[in-house]
View 1 (tube, protein in one colour):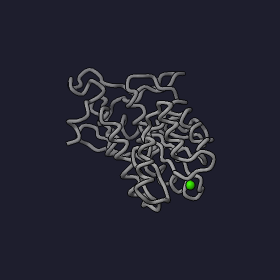
View 2 (cartoon, helix red, strand yellow):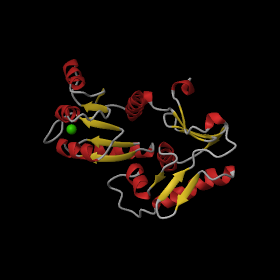
View 3 (cartoon, protein in one colour):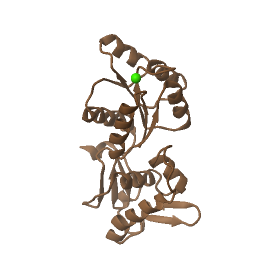
View 4 (cartoon, rainbow, N blue to C red):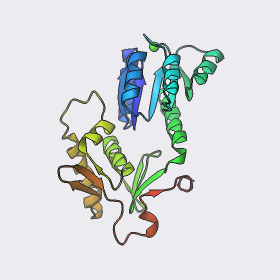
Length: 243
Ligand code: CA
């Protein structure tokens, strides 16, 4: 899950980034409205956290511009101001939710997850590959009934592979979706996470889920012979599995 945080107060922006990254999100930060619109045009974000009072282009205008460009990314708007007028105006410009500063990070996270879930209503809520199931909203992975404990980044890599199960996923795609623009380390970091996922899943359950396609990338194997028919489709339709 990749997020854009638009906030001109650097201390606030960095604390949001740190908190969200600890939750496993990949986070880009834009310091003004112009930069926000540039990022949003370049990257397909899962959600945008948008401060209202921004240099150059304010949050209302950013939001309205996104919608005019038919960009329907969920937007959670932040403001230091208080009052019904602001809220109404924010929602009128196409924001999905609204949070008044100061807010607690826990509340922000809950609102954000609700936004991501709401948008995800028509998507599968549990991603599946044979006996392996990953629930993005609950941040859980199971093999059959056995829970698999993953770090936030391992989870993000696996989620991305599972969303594209059956496809060959190039390493740069994983890097771009799980890390962020500021990542300037070794791209081979992806291999490190693939190795640890293999240790925790493939080796533990004695089955190859993550296949290396030489020179091309990685492929998550959807199902092999012997899987139950119901687990072989790659994706389980959402609604029934959340009850
Ligand atoms: Ca501000």
